[in-house]
Length: 201
Image (cartoon, rainbow, N blue to C red; front, top):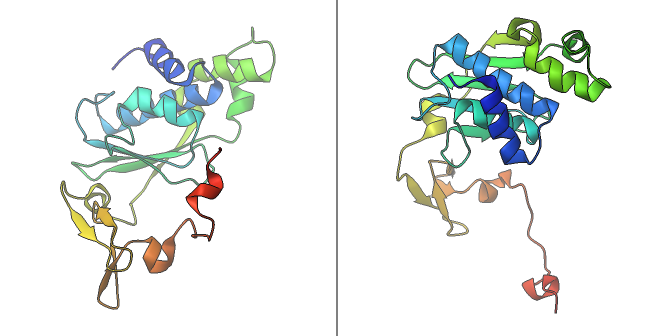
């Protein structure tokens, strides 16, 4: 495994600076790798990380694990929580890690030289033992990991909007192949404004 400082430097480079939640992300990823017996950051696609927030934590997790959205080894399920699940796609073992409720206060004890709470977290999170920083839960995914990862080249066409659907994300409703949006699970709704309305002249 790479050294903590090297991974923090990589995370800071992605993020343009280093902050406490990046440190949490790096530490979380390293601890999960240790618990699952995986050599991280990974060069293959064995580990899947499901992150429960976006932002700083993701950059730390990406640096520590080698997982990314673009490689389809990281997914964001935005629950607004600094938490992540780590799934070994070969064994099926899955762990969810969450910072302990008192981790902010505990971090200060590991950074007596810190100037203020933010710096105490930034420094303290780097030194506090992982078992004193995170709660670890053994979990089972509600969707099998094979279904989440899908198959290379899996494609379908929505029978309503005619848009292509990748990675077996289609829905079957009343015998029709539909994308999630046409099946009533859209995150958007269309409006009557034309594209020209948004163009700056």
